[in-house]
Each structure stands twice: as C-alpha cells, then as structure tokens.
Image (tube, rainbow, N blue to C red; front, side, top):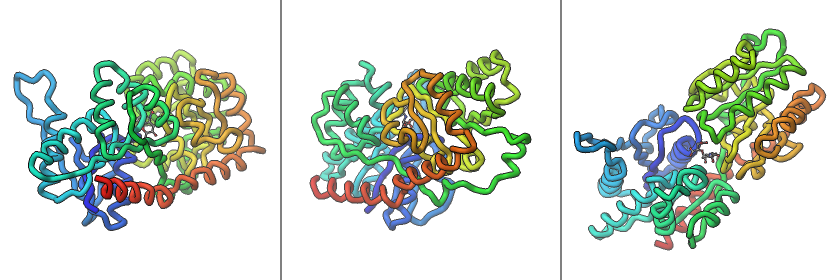
Length: 374
Ligand code: GMT
C-alpha cells in the first residue's frame, strides 16, 4: 500500500505513534509518505520506503494566524496525486481530520478517490476537541472519515459521550518496539546519578497541566523521606518553571534533575526503578508503556485508559487522581527490595502484550477493510 501519514512532529504521544507506525509499515514493504510541518524527531534515518513532505506555510502581513490547515490540505492533495497514495491516515483529529476531509473533496472533484482514516489520540477528544470553538468541526470530520480508530476503549467511550458521533470506532491500542525499548546496561549512568545506591524515580511528559507533575513531585518528596531516592524529570513544556519553583520551595532541588527533551529516553528508563504518571487524564499512556518495556513498574492515576495498560498490583498500582498518599504508599511497596524484581518482571510481561508485531497487523487489516469498503 501507499499510505500518507499526517501527524504532529512531537517527541512523544501521537507524533511518536504515527512515526513508529509509519516506520514499521515501511519495513513491511509499504510505501509511507509523511506529511508534517517539521521532520518528526524519530524520522532520522534513510529508508527506500519512507518519504517526507514538508508543509510549506507562506506568511503574509494580513495573516495574524497563518492558515496552516489550508497549506496542509493542499500538500495532502499534491502528495496523493503525485505519489499515487492509496489512503490517508491522519493522527490527532484537530485539524488533521478536517483538512483530510477537504483534501478528499478536492480530489473527488477531480475524479480521484482517497479514503481517510483518523486516529483519535486523547486531548483531541478529551480536552481541546470538546471546546465549543472546535467541537462542530471535530464531530463532522470524525463522522466523515472512512475509518476511525482510538488508542483505548476509554477514549472510544469518551468520543461517543462527548460528540454526536454515530460511526464505528475501532480500538487499536498503542504499541511498543521492544527491540528499541529494552533495559540496557547503563550502570555508569546510574552510578553518576545515584552514587549512594539511591532509588531512581522517573517522570517523562510534555509538562502540561493535565500531567499533574506537582503530584509526581509530592510523591517523590514523601518517598525520599522514607528511603534515599532521586527524581529525573524528562521533557519540557509550559509547567516547567512552576515545577522548578515547587522543587526549590520543597528544598529537594539537589535530588531532582530536569533533563529536558531527550531523543534516547530508553537510556534513562534503563536505570529507573519506578515511573510516575499521575495524570488528570490519559487516553492510553504511551510513556508508561515505554517505561514498562524497560522493566520499570508504574505508579499511575486511574484516569482514562490507564487501567487498560497498568495492571493493579501487577505492573504497578493505580490511584484516584490526586490521591498522593495512596501513590506514596504504593511507591514504597514497589520500591521495597523484596518486591521490586517481581514488579519489574511483571511490567515487562505486560509491555510484551503491546509489542509492535502484535499491533501492526491490526492497522494493516483495518486499512484493507477501509479500502475495500470505500
Ligand atoms: O500526552 C500528551 O499530552 C500528548 C498526547 C498527544 O496527542 O500526542 O498524547 C496522547 O496520545 C498518546 C498516543 O496515543 C497517548 O498515549 C496519551 O495518553 C495521550 N495523552 C492524553 O490523553 C493526555
């Protein structure tokens, strides 16, 4: 198949899922055309089956906001026509699904049919998409997609609950490439951060409010009062300055490191003992899956689709959103040397259920179905 993939070029979340999916499809012999405004971070290699089309967004003094959606639509039309693309797969509904609908209509007016698959990732439904400024467009473009997938059953249910969506939504969970995300021997790194055998706790995110990083810091604050520990905060975003202030105010700045955005997050995860994801909402929790693949148990909230990933008392624990006391209790239990090896093994076993080779055929079969039906 020749597939056009539209995504945000982000370090995590939907951008990573889209990029890894495209890479895996290319390995399986499909021709993949990425259409984005910037090279996605994980698209840093050459493959004869991978093509990158950058959306050019010309500016003009009249535009206070450059019309990105129009530029993206035009690029999709051009790529479909010039590269003979069979199907467009857009990741994150806003504005990709409506741009794809527009592209489909333009192509139809020229006698060319191209089906559109939209993958819902989370905040496009649970946070941003619900806003009255976007809702009518999101509802319309989901209903008009030829195929719709969501990354968890919870997100599927949320979509039906918040939007007047009447079409089928296929759940295809996020996946992990275990050949990349595996526990590597990085003892020198661990020793540098934890020279006295401290336990290493990690949180990675885009530092947005929905991640509740204050809770992660407070969990760490209480844990380090009971056992020697360090905290690594990976990623960057709007909450970073506030969280740095909190860490200083709590007097734990020496035990916390802010690492910023990292390409090779698996190296940090390889030396971690515990991963924190106390999010307000999380449609799936890809970052937690990456941790589990590196044998790191997860203390998470029970929001959104997290219960579909993290198994209570097995790969870690889940607590109600904001219940820091419960998270501390669970973290101390997992970090106990008598329990940690079991949780590490369980985390890996759970991650193996989401191995790329198990999920990729689901997308391929879904594309085939959509192509046959349209
Ligand atoms: O986590 C984020 O805020 C980024 C966001 C995105 O759209 O890139 O992530 C969402 O999609 C990921 C990939 O499907 C999911 O694993 C995340 O759980 C989801 N984030 C939220 O629902 C908050």
